[in-house]
Image (cartoon, rainbow, N blue to C red):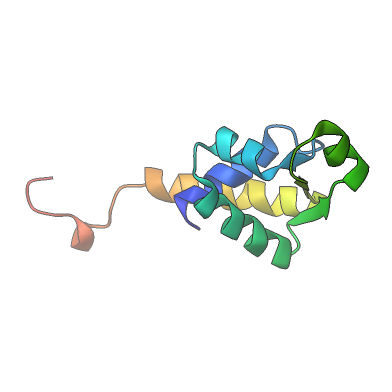
Amino acid sequence: MTLQTQLVLRAFLEDPATERYGLELCELAGLPSGTVYPILARLEQVGWVDGAWEDPAVHEGAGRPRRRFYRITEDGAEQAREAVARAYRSRRQPLPGWAARPGR
């Protein structure tokens, strides 16, 4: 799992019940839209995230483009917590002897 995917998942896990739109997730994760939207598409494909377009009356009334809202699924939140914890643990462990570089 990439660091960028972990950042997006952490943004969802801050408040799993909250729907978030794409640019909001970009801000929370500190990543550009060109990175976040492909991650959201992949998470949606595997069922970790559900996405839905907002009602046209809302964005038309606000005079802005239509937003797609995303929410992490219950199963997705559970899987995300495990995956992020696993990735964190793997970085915190020392390298095996054969992988250590001389002088480190």
